[in-house]
Length: 254
Image 1 (cartoon, rainbow, N blue to C red):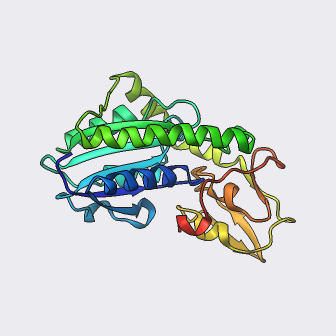
Image 2: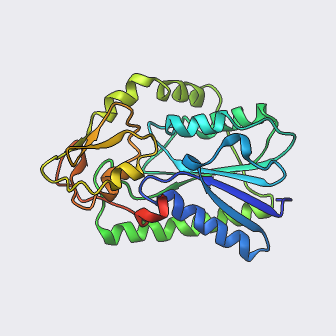
C-alpha cells in the first residue's frame, strides 16, 4: 500500500464489522499509517478524499449487503488509481458482494488492492454460547491482522467469480426480498420501554415512537441493530426469546 493516509468507511449492525475496522486501524497505525474511521450512514460518498487509500467494511446480508450500503458504494466518485480495499463480516458465505464490488469500483477507476471476508457470530440464526463466540472472534481477529499486513505488503488479493457472483448480486437486489425478511423483525409492545435507542440506531429511519412504544415501518433492511441492542429485548427476529448477540456498545455505533 502506497498511501500514508487510510480512510475506512464502515457500517456495523451488531458491532462485528466495527471490531474488524478497529483492528485494521490499530495494525495500520503500528506500521506508520494514519487512519480515520467513518460511519457509512453518516458519510457522503461524494466527499471522500481520493488522495487517501479507502477501506469499505460492512456485514453480509442476503449473500450481498444492505441497499443503503450499496447506494454509498454506487455514489463513490470516479477515480484515477485510488487504492481501495473491502472487508465484510458474515455467518456462513456471501457470493454476491466481493466480485460485484470489484467490478463496480474497477469501472470507476479505483485500484482494488484486496478483499477479505470474516466469519463472526450473528443474531440471524441464533447466537452461539458466549464461549464459542469468543473462540470465533479470537480466531477471526488473527485473520484480520494478517489481512492488514497483506495489504501493507501488497500481497492481498481481490478475487472475482464472474457470472455467478453477478447473478447472486441481482437476486439480492430484488426489493421485494427485503420487504419479506423485514417483516420478520417484530416488536413486543408490552416489553418496549420507550427508550428510543432503536430509533437512534436504525440506519434507514425505519422506527419511530408512537404512544411511548417503538413502531416499525416498511423500510427495514434487517441490519439487526434494534434486535442486538434493545435493552428490554422487545425487538426480535422471527422468534421471541432468543439471546441477542452484540460485539460493541450502542454508543460506538452512533
